[in-house]
Length: 326
Image (cartoon, rainbow, N blue to C red; front, side, top):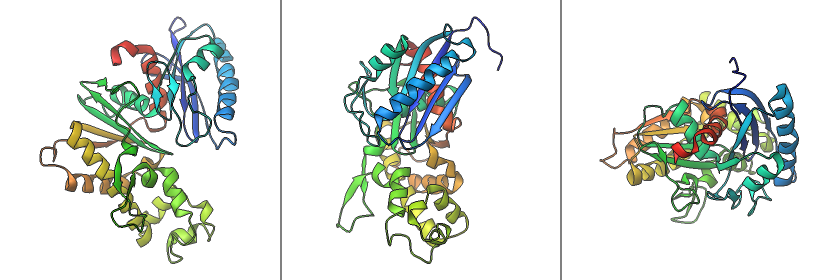
């Protein structure tokens, strides 16, 4: 895009479990510069903050953005105190407990900062620039390292009591990984990308007759969600059954969401959602089968349009238009 020299710009930051992104964009969510890394930070929050400090300064100084960046928008992967931008914790990365993230950004970069949950940011991105453009009551969720949720009623974000709401991954579903009769677990613990790969990596979980076992040549530590997707595409019985179990558990959570708040559109993003139709078809099938009669055929399930950029775009939009979006 051609940049207007007098245009106000915004710095956008995504802090995730494995993916960290920083970008510069305009009030319409158009990205001008983008830097991304995907890695495990050995020392958790400390290493992530150091990476951000170095790379944000480099990006702001690039092409003389320093005097053009007006504000910072941050999408953080975990629950927050909305009014203060204080992190409660991260379920994937150690070291974030009670961290004053908004304060840290404002002290280090001398710019006003808005901090929201990363899935909520992704939802804003999709609501305004993606799959939710025509939606009135919209629900966004992601299947990535973790699983979150964002609810938008009359196109305004619903924040509950001020610590976020609609944490879909923390709703309870039957636990088919447990031998305990009637066992249940948090949906995120069996359906997130991190939990899927952890389970597939357990000794004896993947049968040696499965293509998945052949793909990793017996080294289960190397099995990924991408491998699972490939094995399903190739018709592997175990992989297909595993993905169907994941889809059904996710659908139970979606069905509960439909029963409680009845969104007209549900959009799913995150790295695991990149599997595409082989994941979405069973999710759609199970959700419709389980849905209450008042919800049946009265909602749409859509894939994220923005995918990897959803959080970055949403954080820019929120920083630029905060008062209009709450």
